[in-house]
Image 1: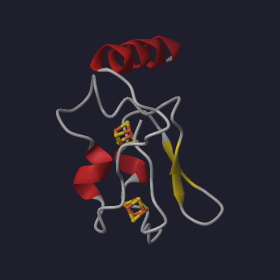
Image 2: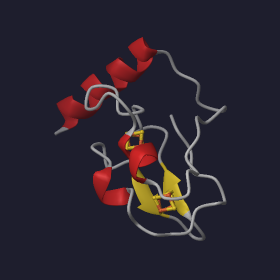
Image 3: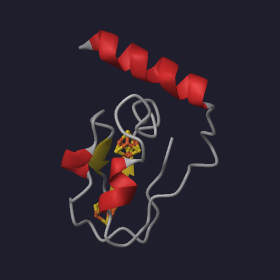
Image 4: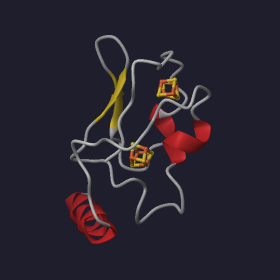
Length: 82
Ligand code: SF4
Ligand code: SF4
């Protein structure tokens, strides 16, 4: 999963771009739900949120390091929920 740092300026550009509805407005800044973020695996070549964020504040979350296989499995599970 990726994460949003406190550099976030609450511009709301990333939220509608996420294919997994993993991003939402938190109490102070936007937040990513690690259970829904596939790092865009299954949808796009590169993370959409990282591409659109104007302040570059979305790094990998060191608390949720995942392999491509794990991310793909999460994508499959999320797709099955729909
Ligand atoms: Fe959503 Fe992709 Fe960003 Fe994860 S990397 S929060 S799935 S847009
Ligand atoms: Fe925050 Fe970047 Fe998302 Fe804007 S695009 S809300 S600055 S994380």
